[in-house]
Image (tube, rainbow, N blue to C red; front, side, top):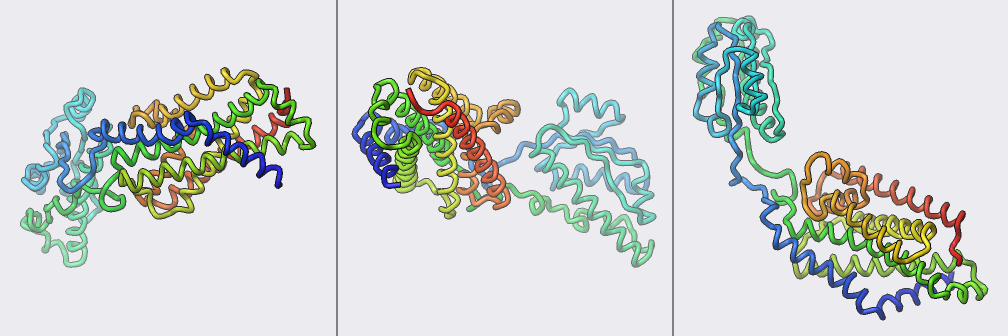
Length: 394
């Protein structure tokens, strides 16, 4: 064990003697966080109560011709809901779907022909909702119209208890139906402090993860250069097992990566004002697992490739692709590319760190940690198996 820490200490000394490495691994991420966080701040629109939602274009096919037909019409064109939706009356179901396919409407509603009869007879009432592509617009429309249905069902309960004579059309006024939709639809955030991550917070996370992966590349280069410079022969001549040598080197890289993470987190906190959350144990765990994954990839590439140039080229390409697909450079790449990003280390590490920042649901954080832990375990076992088969020798 003493020999392992001795080798790790020399590896750290070697890193700190190379000023170019220190500049790249410690200075560059801080510079990129500042540049990207400032330049792309407009992409990140914070949520707030003053934010305006785009009106939802709703197509309504009203088949009901009963006693409450006029009540439905009054509701659809009442001023309180027009802050959020614009209603377009449709005559046929075919016209409804034609307008939906041509993007003339965002949301469709079909009022059944027996709606009035159901209300009068105190049967459960419902409308058919045809949702569009926008999750936000679907949520706004469904909230408004389901609130109306729930009020109708409440009226039905009164009929059931007090009798049909209590059911009067005057009950279905704006006041009785409580159509104050400013109280039902609120624009805000489920995140801490009613806000979301800013651009500089977002890029602090993505740059931290990306440069932790670069530390793994540094480990791979260090191992490869020992072979190319023939210093591995001299290391193997001393009474030490090759496992001790590689574990010591990887430990040294891991300690350097931890120092790198602490520098980035501390500097971004006190200079850029980045809030990393209060769960430092989970934060530390994500960093450790990311380092294990990156160094495992380094061992795999070192065992399979002979040239340090090949290792650098492949590792750089791998880091670039994973960072890009995970949204580390440009957020919201689209559904297809975002789905590919879920196969990267960056996605799960960055997503977990962002959730820690906003104090998200602990269930999601635990799930993400499970994915990161499983990934690091698989990579570590793969690296160990390949190393056991190939070895670290010239």
